[in-house]
Image 1: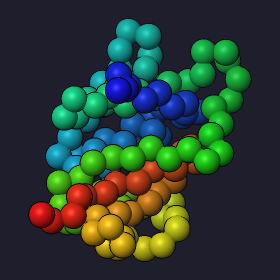
Image 2 (image 1 turned 90 degrees about the vertical axis):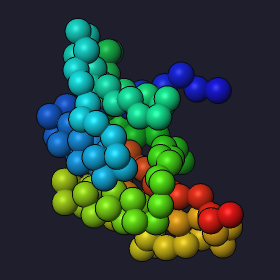
Image 3 (image 1 turned 30 degrees about the vertical axis):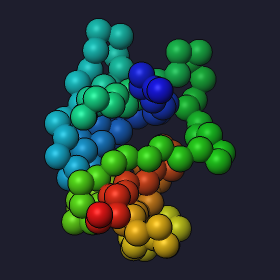
Length: 124
């Protein structure tokens, strides 16, 4: 359904440190800057792009929005959460845990305040 998700950042180098660490915890590669100055992460067919807003105004977060990231296992979720906290993220909501549907999830805010979750699917 989606080709990509684009979020804004007021500090692309700070965002790079955070997302490089959290995507590495999920088995991804570091982001790359494109010719337009956007930081791009590609992993398992998905694309996350981070940019300074093109209107020149400060980046702000979307109230009620959450970006969900797939993780291969609960251990990957925990590693993602730890990497995020260690690179300027803020732990939010409940601690990483199994959810009633059997998935294992954790939540963070990135250094710009964007709400993220990593979750693994229930064992079959």
